[in-house]
Image (cartoon, rainbow, N blue to C red; front, side, top):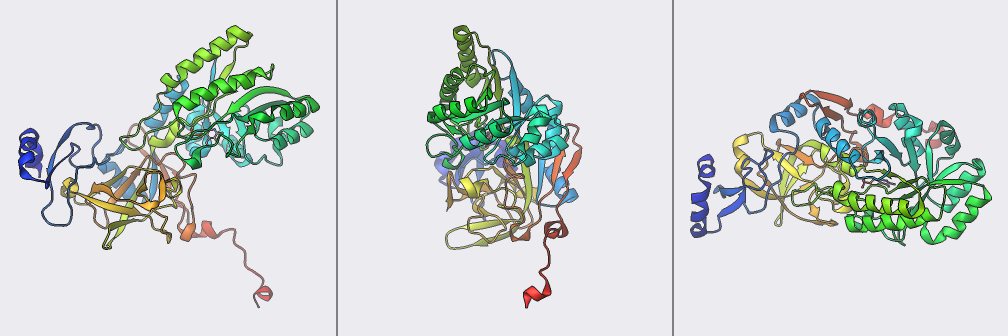
Amino acid sequence: MKAVLGCVSSLYVAAAFLGPQYRQVPSFSNGLTTGMRGRRQLIVSAADGTSGSTSLERETLRFLNPDTVENLANQYGTPTYIYDMATLKASARSALSFPNAFGLTVRYAMKASPNAAILKLFNNLGLHIDASSGYEIQRAMRAGVPASHISLSSQELPSDFDSFVDLGVHINACSISQLQRFGERCPGGKIGLRFNPGVGSGGTGKTNVGGPSSAFGIWHELLPEVKRVVAEHKLQVVRVHTHIGSGSDPAVWQNVAALSLDLVREFPQVETLNLGGGYKVGRMRQEQSTDLAKIGAPVKEKFEDFALETGRKLHLEIEPGTFLVANAGALVCRVQDKTSTSAHTFLKLDAGMTEVLRPSLYGAQHPLVVIPKDRTRADRAASYVVVGHCCESGDLLTPAPGEADTVSERELTSAEIGDLMVVEGSGAYCAGMSTKNYNSFPEAPEVMLAPDGALYLIRRRQTLEQALQNELDLPTSALA
Ligand SMILES: Cc1ncc(COP(=O)(O)O)c(C=O)c1O
C-alpha cells in the first residue's frame, strides 16, 4: 500500500481507466495524522473482502497522535476523556479578542464542561463564569472563581438565591416569576433580565432557545409586565441578556444583537448587554466554525452607534461554552465488539451515550478516528454503523445528521475488536451531559494533556461503590 501511496499523480491518471475499486480518498493515508487536510491521493481497495475503500473523506485526530492515544488508554483505561490545554488556552485568547467598543467580559458557559481544572484554567486567563444553577455557582466558587465573576441565568432559580446575591453573584431573571421573587427578597437590588427576543437559532431544534416555542427568558412582548414588577420593587435593571441557541446562525445572532439594543433602550440604568453564546463550531471537517472577529465587528459598530445616539457606552458580555471547549476535548474508547446483519456492520464501543450523548439526543456528528492495533491496517477503509454499549437502540454514534433516530454508516479506517477509537469534538456537553450510570456503567475519567505532553488526571474513574453510595436499604419489614 505504501508504494501505491507514493505515486499519487500517476495512479490518479491510471484510476480513470482502472475502474471503481480505485477511488480518490484524502491524503491522510493512515487516517491518523493531523495537518494534512485538503491534499488528496489514491488508495487501492482491499482485495480481501473485509473492507473496501470508498471516496468519503476520513476524519483525523485533532490534538492527539496515535502514541498518545495508546499511552492514555494504557495508563487510564477506556473510555477516558482527554482535554488539550493548548487548545483551551488558544480558544480563550480568541474569545477575549472579541470585537468590542467599550469593554468586554467573556463568561465561560460552564455547563459545557464543568471540571474544576478547566474552570481554574479559564479563571486564570481572566474569563468569568456563566452558571445555570445554584450548584454550578457553588462548583465555580469551589474552583476558586470569585463570586463577583459569576452570573446566573437559570431555568430554576435556586431557593437560596439571595445568599448568592449577598456574595456578589449577578442574577439574570429568566422569567417574570423569577423577577418577582428577586424583587420580594432583594428590593431595590441590581438585576439583569434575560429576554427571549422573539427569534432563535440553533444547530438543531433542541438547541434553539429563542422564539415562541422556547421557554427560555422573558418573552419580549411581556415588557409592560416586566416594567410593572421592576417598579413595584424599585429594582435597578443593570443588564440585558439574550441567548438564542447553540450552534446559531451568525446572521440571526447579529440581528438579535440589534433587537437586544432595542430592549436596552427601555431601561436607562442598563450598563451591560450580554449577547450569550452559541457560536457554532465545526466538529466535522466539512463544518464551518464561526469567525468571532467577523461576527463581532458589526456588533461593535452597533454599540458605537448606540453610544452616539444615547450617550450610553455599553459593556459587552459574551458567554461561549462550545466555542471554548468543543474541539479541545476527545473521548478515547475501544471497539469491544463487531457484528453484522444483512444491512450493516456494527462497531460496538466500550462507551456511548454514557459519555457522548449528543448524537443520540440531537443527531450531532462527531468525528470518529480508529487507531488500529496493527497500524498496517490504517490504509484500509470500511463503512460501519458505530454504536454505544447501552441497551438502547438510540445509543448510536453515527446517526444521520440532525436525525438521532436514523442509523447511518460512516466510512472509517477498517476496525477490529480491540482497536482504539477516538471520538473527537467531545469537549463540550459530553462529560457534563451524558446518561452517566445508565446500565450502571461508571463515570469515565478526565485527563488534561499539557503542552509539554504530560498527562494529568483531573477526574478519577468512578467506582461501583461511588455509583451506589446514596442507595439505602428498605427495612426488612417493608419488603415482606
Ligand atoms: C444562557 C446560556 N449562555 C451560554 C450558553 C452556551 O452556549 P454554547 O455552548 O452554544 O456557546 C448556553 C447554552 O446552553 C446558555 O444557555
